[in-house]
Every structure is written in C-alpha cells, then in structure tokens.
Image 1 (cartoon, rainbow, N blue to C red):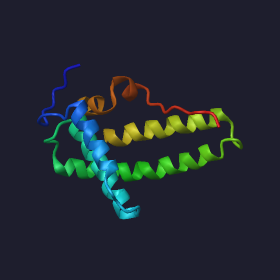
Image 2 (image 1 turned 180 degrees about the horizontal axis):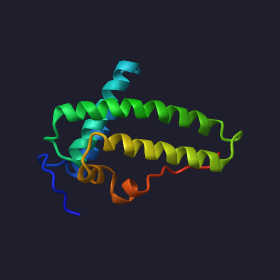
Image 3 (image 1 turned 60 degrees about the horizontal axis):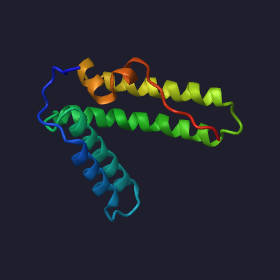
Image 4 (image 1 turned 120 degrees about the vertical axis):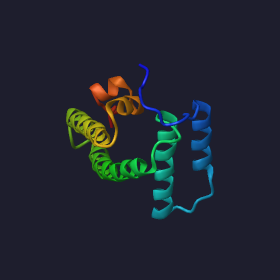
Length: 135
C-alpha cells in the first residue's frame, strides 16, 4: 500500500541495521540514564526507518511517552513469562496478545491510520499478537 503521508526520506534497511548495531556496540555504562538514551534512540531509528527522517519532533516526544507506558506493561508480561511453569501457556498467550493490542492502540493515539500501518504493518494493526514460547 502506498502511504499518503510525507515525512521526508526513510532510512534504508541497511542504514537502519547499521545504526542499531552502532548504538548497541557503544561503550555505555549500564545505568538507567543510558537505558533511557538507548531506548529513545531506538525509537527514533524506528521512526526514521518506518515513517521518515522528518517526522515531527513533538510527535516523536509523544511516541516516547507512549513507549514508556508500554514498557511498564511489557515488564509485567515478562514477570508472568518467568513464572511460566506456574501459569498455563494459554494465559501467557492471552496476556501477550492484550499487551500487543495495547501497544497498537496506544500508538494509534499519536499516529494516523496510514502511519500506524507503515509502522507496524497492516496485519499487525488488524490483529496484534506477540509470540509466546513455552518455558
């Protein structure tokens, strides 16, 4: 599908992958400030790759706020996954899919339908899901 929005050129897959490798191969000390820096930079790279390098900064900030809310949910899902032997796999799958729906719904608050589809893909927007591996 051809998208109607214009946010400047997009990173190529090669540029995107190279930037991600460079980001994670940096000699950063492990602390919350660097985790936040890396998380924000990862988000910006995803935006540059999927939506365009001229995506507005105020909307990037809004997506960052959304991403922080999502991270809290993801951490709770991780705790459930770690307790995998205590909870049925179907429970984890349902919970993972609720998190996936939450992610898409949250991003939909800041992105147009075309942008949302470009960011996640049409299938994921229509039916969000996360894979659940067995313990």
